Length: 166
Image 1: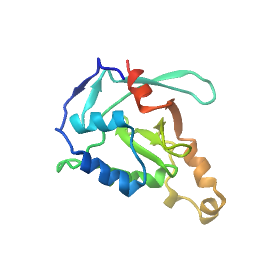
Image 2: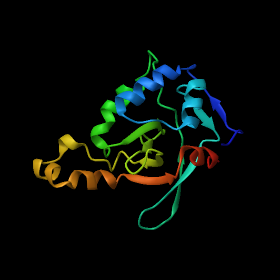
Image 3: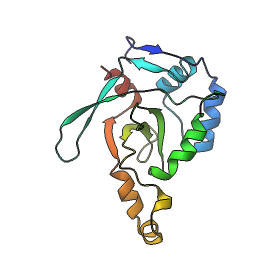
Image 4: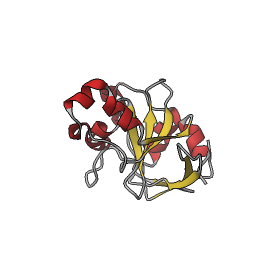
């Protein structure tokens, strides 16, 4: 994993137990590299902080900015579970945000096909809130298809994602 990264504006540390509570509640196991970073740099942002996503139709590369890790247990900011509770109705099941960007979008773990999550970018302007959909859309699976449109593949693993920051 990229050891040249500097984690800025850390809100302190968090315990392994705090992370384990979230993992248990969500039924997932976060990557070890992520856990190590969060335990030491809770709520911080990396330098370098740029990464790329690719347009679905054009394949063109777009630069995005890694904002802040969603924090655990900080009193003055929404914590991980509070943030997830708000966002889960806009994302497919088992897509879990772990960081934001300055534009209000999110970087997420994608646990849908594996216990070793891929990293995806969630464009919240495109994301569809399940409560804004019709009953027919919810029952037909159309909501999931619409939510999928908001996701862009970023990396096959958290370690690869961190290694590719520039």
